[in-house]
Amino acid sequence: MMPRYMISLATMIACAAATVANETIFPPVNDQTIVGVWEALLEPPPAPLTLFRMEISATGDSYLSQTTAGNPDFVLFKVVPGDSKISNGTIAFHFHQVSSGPGAHDLWIRGSGTATATQGFIKCGIGNGDVWFVKGNWTRDLAAASQKGEKEIQRQHSK
Image 1 (cartoon, rainbow, N blue to C red):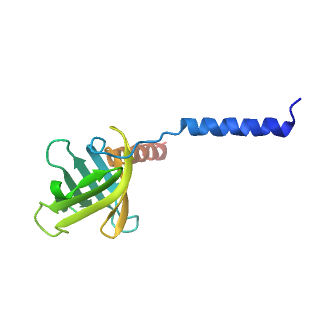
Image 2 (image 1 turned 60 degrees about the horizontal axis):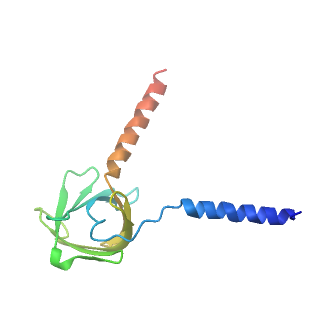
């Protein structure tokens, strides 16, 4: 008969193997998986939140917008193709400001990430801060979730 500690050890190994087997690992971001919409928030509260939205095109121009919550102004940048690259999961994008008004005029985003055609994460530096770009329109999903929660709370108050 097998000792109880051997059965426990075998069970732990089997559970660990099942956990690793179910973990999704994305490949390094490349020139195909970078294509799409990416969004990031720069400042944690209480500072004004700054939203970055990057739209990377496979064939045309690519852009980055910067908007601060509560401020009607925005800054729009266009990627400088000859000064931007993706290699082995690492990105280095040079954006030049195309909107009028104040702004950085030139902005570099450097970092690394993983992605598929529909999902991805890029950790990078913008100016003096680090941000996580997440692939997709996820900030819209947050707004919808907030509105749903607000409606449910109002419904509870009206009972």
